[in-house]
Figure (cartoon, helix red, strand yellow):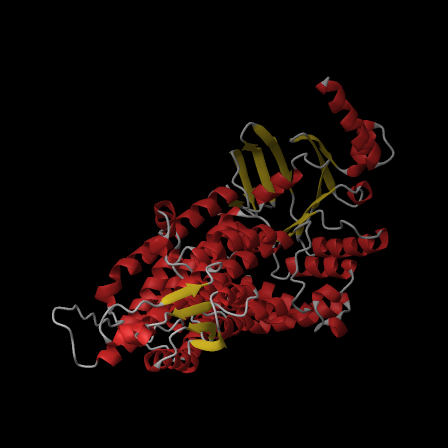
Amino acid sequence: MEKAIVTKDLTKRFGDFIATDAITFEVERGEIFGFLGANGAGKTTAMRMLCGLLKPSSGQATVAGYDIFTQTDRVKKNIGYMSQKFSLYEDLTVRENIRFYGGIYGLGRRQIKLKTEQLLEKLQITREADQLVSSLPLGWKQKLAFSIAILHDPSIVFLDEPTGGVDPITRRQFWDLIYEAAHQQVTVFVTTHYMDEAEYCDRISMMVDGRIKALDTPRRLKAQFGADSMNGVFLQLARQQNISNQ
Amino acid sequence: MRQFPAFVKKEFYHIFRDRRTLLILFGMPVVQIILFGYAITNEIRHAEIAVLDQANDYYSNRLVNKIGASGYFKITRALRNEREIEEAFRNGSIKVALVLPKNFGYDFYHGRKAPVQLLTDASDPNSASTLLNYATAIINNYQQEMMGDQQLPLTIDVQPRMLYNPALKGVFMFVPGVMTLILMLVSAMMTSITITREKETGTMEILLVSPLSPGKIIVGKVVPYILLSFINALIILGLGVFLFGMPVKGSLLLLLMECGLFVLTALTLGILISTITASQQAAMMISMVGLLMPTMLLSGFVFPLESMPLPLRILANVFPAKWFIIILKDVMLKGSGLPGIWQPTAVLCGMTILFIALSVRNFKTRLA
């Protein structure tokens, strides 16, 4: 079966600064792939290149089987995206937001109507459907944003620190949605800096200063670094980096 | 092709749910027209004048009556001696003083020189010179009336005619000015704000990741404002024509097309601003300082361009406002057709193309 994401030596330079330095990895279909790293490690840059928001400086990559240099249009049709900044329109109602995103992804009216009802029911917000999004609690907004990001049935969904600023219980509920999507063969590519969230991923890559320093399942990473949590793995990596910098 | 209507619909939701936007869109044009039409005018009526009539004869009385009946002046005081003049100016009760000498009637009747003195409060130089002009005109008129048909040989009789605006109405100047100002404000400021707002809230990223092309995103954001700006232009035109009697001598179709062109110029300028700013605040500041001020001050709307120093006159050419005001005045007052205004029209077209080119370049470098 074809891989969801394949990159080879993917590099992005901003002037003299190398944001991502020749990263190479593969993501399987239906996998939940965690992309970890400190702020400024190059996570967002890498994700933005894969989404077609940034042009890579060199290297190769395919997303959903399409080349990100030459087939960005195809790539865009096959991915969903949710950014760290909250990405719904606050002055539109829940229903209007769903209709809008359905519309710009080219769904038909009947299809949008059907999906709207399904989505409202799944999130149990049928009663709030005609309220402005600004009146909803943050946790609900994030679940709604995720559901809208996969409204057009993309084969891959990119989540850029999706759970920033919410409590652990809401985070857990959010991850239930992610599992459900993965169960339906949607590949999930998620960046985060919550280490407890990292445990939920199938595989994890750790980025430090633009490079991938480790890539494996959470269990094997913990064994490799002799740590009992992902936090321990991360601290070890950071320490190694500090030593090599000196 | 389903994408685009969905996008435009969303944009209308934004506009109609934001009270501030609505107020700027539809409240401001009306308020401005009314303000400029009734309150802010450089015509002066009923200016207080004091008269020191030392002659107090038939001719001097007739002159004083004529000035009082003109509507421009209101005779508030009859002065008794020269010392009272100073005092009247000082306590602010008069703007002008007229002094008629002792032998005014005698001198005037016998065809010799009859001096008249006009004193004005020049602490406000503009209105002082305006009043002086009014008074001089009335006095000249009086002189001609009195002399009747007996023209002296070889005198030059100037018969001025004010073309295109015979009554010298200020309205004819401010309707084009306000129209330019409003269209600039709505089109450039509102579009730059609405685009930067999407950047600020992070929704722009989502849009860019979607299959919508950047071009479509921008056009989708701008289309509602084209419509609304055009409606605004119609409102201002309607108010100007029906409330203030502004004529439209040229072709209405041409006028509307030129309005459309200017809206386009302003919109592309707004897009350009949005490509170089990241926040709504910055976009607003640039629009305010960079567009509104020059539109007010350097377009010939408030202050005549001809009396400005050369550097400012050259600078004025850079702003679209100057050219649009020329077009509006020519079409509305002179009835010019396209051959008469092709030059400013070409300038506006050129500016629009330039703004589009610059925006596209900026947009691309941002994405790369």
